[in-house]
Length: 288
Image (cartoon, rainbow, N blue to C red; front, side, top):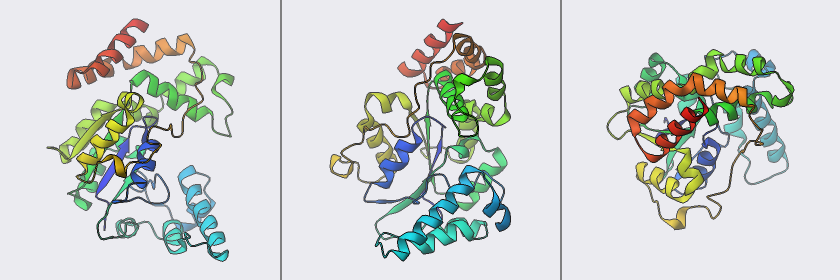
């Protein structure tokens, strides 16, 4: 079976928090690995997957190794069958659907921020596979989100720290096609809403996660039509998950991001017209 819902992003907008809190819910089954990246990547043959250093493929190998060791040790939580299917199986629609077991009394889902930025052809394909799915999209102040994503990129082991790079190198990364697609909230929402309209898509705000995470989680659970009471929520629902390191944004880079993203901020405020988008607009215009 295919998942009942997808958390499609946005990157650096609380998707790890979303994944971990949904995985802890007694009526939800989530993959043991966040971000399967099937719907936003072309399938690769097994030799390429085994030799690739791409993070999402490397995670599959690490997960398999961990479960093999756990199985050999007799640990009760090991799931070697799933890990082998995930890492070694030929990546087809049938393979993806088989990763989500049908469990009585539970729904299943996946969270992968790469899915927000896929094109209309890919969204249409997703809809053909799972026409009744629901879609969750968490969004954040575009300037803050872009800086957080840039800092995360340059924090990777092969790069070091963002402070080691010039403003030109940082802004060049922002201009990459992948980075631009992550920033295009309005385009992403339009694309997904074309196939998932009328209550099938929930846009949540990172600001709610910072202000009242229990409220945001309850809103999401109600959207999924499952128990949203306090007794099914984790005691540490407000704990920050996968936080950045609060790298200080250079003023010139901040102004650059504001100039490049002001039209997106205005578009979002015109669409949602709430206190959060008003704050984003005020902050971005102040930088200009």
